[in-house]
Length: 380
Image (tube, rainbow, N blue to C red; front, side, top):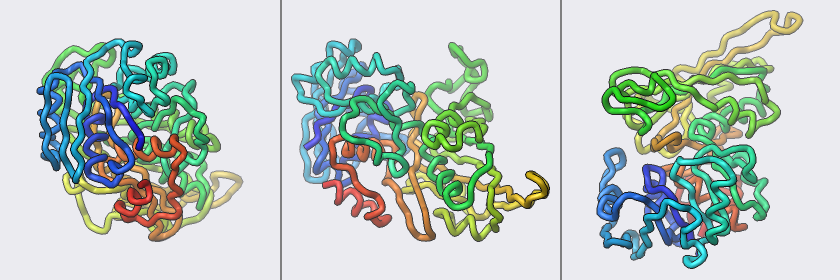
């Protein structure tokens, strides 16, 4: 049984806990402790009620230093800690295997090492981290590089997990010369409800639900890190839009191979219906909208060769936004019908997969079908 602690019980931290109890993963992974500065009553309330995903599927109660969860045949008591100094956390006493660093407060190795000094064996960031960590993982893309010796890793960003698997499929099958990505991103909690001061970005001083707001993004750097053979070939931009859940990515690429719409659509998981973001709140994967796939010929790019430009829209479903992170998708489709996906509340589930791989129990996704219960059943 893996013993994990959650540091920072915001949207992502709460989604980790919910994902465990909504899946078979709880049979092999247990949340032992939560470090959160908020009071226990509020922690229990926000566990029980979620404005985006509804009520927790079990019973929740709390005392001053304990959260009690009963769900799916499990009844667990989770220690609640209110400690700001990471060096003072009781991870050794609680025999913690992995700390899920979900606070969003830092991304550097030196800070993460405080968890190790407090007795945790490993740390997993739920957000992008500095290059000095042992690895940055997108499950299904490069999780196989984990050898069990890593102590601090990152599960990359939301948008990276959404688009990198699709880029990899396109590059492996058709070759990519370059591309431009626009993330159409739901509002996040670093934006105010009404106009308010922001310490770095004047656009983020504006009310989240009244404007489309351009923001900075490090998505291109994330692609370079995960797919070094494509370093420097992508540019990225991002917009925040007045929704609370689900994001979309508009991907435009120049391919090395002549293709048609049907060729591209056959390689990806597609939306069969004309839906909008509201329809995808509980979707389980990354979906490409075949209704907006567009292939355009361009002549003479390289000594008269015929190149193909591709534009497609990628839905990043079930986005759980907190700090600088959201719930992202992770789908790799190498052949038509061959889906490799994670489950609901993907960021949480992606973290669960990586935790399991770190423990030496990694799952080869190529042996799994798209059934989420089968995936988590094999984790057991």
